[in-house]
Each structure stands twice: as C-alpha cells, then as structure tokens.
Image (cartoon, rainbow, N blue to C red; front, side, top):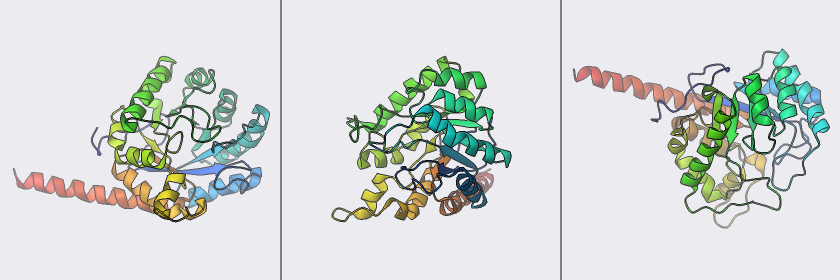
Length: 298
C-alpha cells in the first residue's frame, strides 16, 4: 500500500481523516512510566477526559502492566480496575479501547461501552478472546507477540526483524479472521519493545509500509519506550526517565503519521495531537500540489 492508501478505516469506529491519537490511561500501580498516577477510578476517568480535551481521539484503558517482569494481576482485580473506568468514560461519549489479554475483561468492557479491544497478545494469551470479540462484533488490535516478558526481553532474536514480524503478524491475523473477527475490524501493531531491542524497534518504524502491506490499519505504540531512551542517551549517556521522552514520542508520531499509520498510542497527548495534524497538513499540501501539476500537464 502507498502512504496515501495505507491508513485505512476500522469498521465500528469513527472515521478520522488523519492518523488518530489514542491516549493511554493505566489503572495500575506499576506501569513503566505512569504506574499509580491514575489508580483511583475517579482520577482515571478524569485523566481520560483530560486526554480527550488535549486532542485524543480515543482512550485506551488498561488494568495490567505489560512491562518486562511485571506480575500478572488476577481476573477479579483487573475487572475491578478497568470496567468502572470504561463505563465512566463511555458515558461521557469517549471512544474507549480496552487494553487486556483476558476475554472476560474484554466482554465486560464491551458491555460497559468500550468500542475496541487492544490485546497485546493478539488473542494468544486467552483462547477465549477471539471467540468473545467475534461474538461481540468488535474491532480488535492484533499485536506482534512472542510471549510474556518474564525474565527480560524474551525471544528477541531476529535474522530479519521486518520480514519475521510481518510474517508472524500475518499468520496471527489469518488465525483471527478464521476465528470469526471481520477483516474490516482488524488492526495490526508491530509490538515495539515486546521481545525487541532498540535497533529492532527503529528498523520496524523505518518500514511501516511493509506492515501496512499486510492489508490492515496499523497502530504504532512507541510512547516513552526504552528504545527512545537509548536514542536520546547516545552511545555513552544514561537514558532519560520515561516521562522525559514525550518530545521523542511526538517525533515518532509525526513519522508514523507520514507513513500512513492509522493511529498512535501515547501517554502525553497534546504534542502528538499537534504532530499528527502537522503531518496531515503537509500531506494535504502535497496532494494539492500534485493535483495542480497533473492539471498543468493536460
């Protein structure tokens, strides 16, 4: 797909004329960059509404940290954290995504008003996930995943990271489609930082067109991740803390938008909302100039 055709739309969600901005609400005590900040339901709902006010098009609510070495929460606790926040945001008219690997949490969240299921395992962690999403007719994010990040960066070895991620994602998408999820409701995510080193993440970002060629809209979730810390630190320095990587995140958002990403998932919304709008304006100017050139050659 070309940059112009690669963005796509997702059935069941609003249609945006540019790369969408997905704001993050972590209802956890231990997420890598903002754990504990929005752990209270009321604070989490307020934060989600603040993200929308700052330019988020949709809000991704998660109750379980996926950072390396994180201990999984039990089902009851994840439900307790997530469902009231989803319900509260949806009742305010927010387009809500639920970030979960559990079918029960996805089902309850969809019933509470969520519009999208964002599963970092692509349905692999819970065999009931794909049937549940298919039955609900909901959109589904399929992320590239090689297992839980226990004991560090699990299975992060690649001969050709782009080809391998594309092939593994394609196979997972085929499984999801066979499980009954409609093709126009599938989003793919390269899984930056999941079983990948910094050079893998950067290489994938440089080849988002290859991911778009799978045939589904692409979600890029680079916000505050370790590879950005490595880039900012340079060869000798210490990586800056996660919360000091927002300008770098906005830069990635602009690059992803330029390459046709459907959406970017970020913790700090305002700078990325500006970045994707600038990218869209430049794209629009190029389109207008191309039309003028074509008209002049007739």
